Length: 465
Image 1: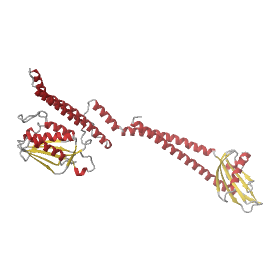
Image 2: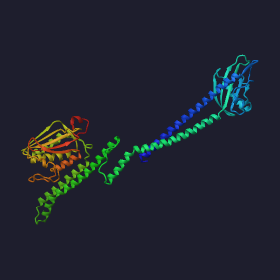
Image 3: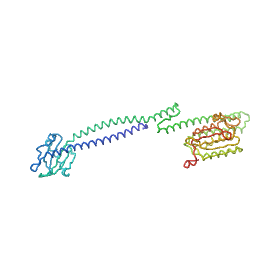
């Protein structure tokens, strides 16, 4: 059973059935006990009345005045009385018992015989089942002045009227609980359908996502579903970013291969091709393909800040500055690190981003490059890596254009115009932002803002590369 609603309905129905059944049994048993207690309370005054109607004559009890209970005088009335002595010999029986037969009288006499062992004055209530089903109440007393002072008064009533009352109550209870079960079941099903409506709405929105009629799930959801919706939206955005990255990687690959392919095409047409040049172009093409495949693989594996290890930023910056200091020996490169920061990012992605920005700073700067790390100042904390140079800088009017693919502001230097675009694309995968401004050094200031930056001292128990 794969339906959550069906599971909840089944479990709730079982719980409701068990609860109502146990409640019904408890109420029925309580009512039956109360009926028996009521029968005992009804017969106790009858025994007192029977005692009051007895008169002592010649050391014997005389009941000639009769009992005040009319049912004791009526045949088959269902109410019987018997008075016995210590030898369990009958002293008096009610007219109703006299007409009922000896089997019934013997049954009541057995009840009276059991009462002889009870203390004087105690009422014994028993259920007797033999010739008839009876409720019997007996009381043994010591009557002074009699030749046999021990006298037992017994009153018995037919159980059928009481049993019919219990049966009627049971039928009423079943009908009432049955109706209550149906009403509660209907209310429970309605409540479950209403409670699960957000899930059905999410299912409908997912179908719309599959059909291309929607770009994301509605963010306004019940509190319990907000993390799920946020994760799904993050997944949708991530998948779209992956598709965009793949398309851009193919564009970059096609763009990068144009020049080598042109050289190869012209070279093979010559009568005496320059084989070293052609081999160089083949190696270049292989390098371009390997680079783009590695980039696509890294982007595919990147999933924001939840699947990567913490990478020390200072180590990556120092590594890049050492490499660039070889190519640009006349440049002064400074690294100002306020704290030992770390990022949850693929190390190669961080190398690509910082490498592109630092290479641009060295290429277009006049001889000085400075790298600084500091807190980004966001609501949830983060890291800002600023790369500054002393070159001509980037005018504010062109700041938004330089991150577009293929845009180059300087045509005198080699390049394909995709460096800052690549940086911006990779930053977007990690929820970061690329900012371009002016540096106090006189040139450009390119800032990489990350939202998941942490100080290394706070990552003692975390995985750090």
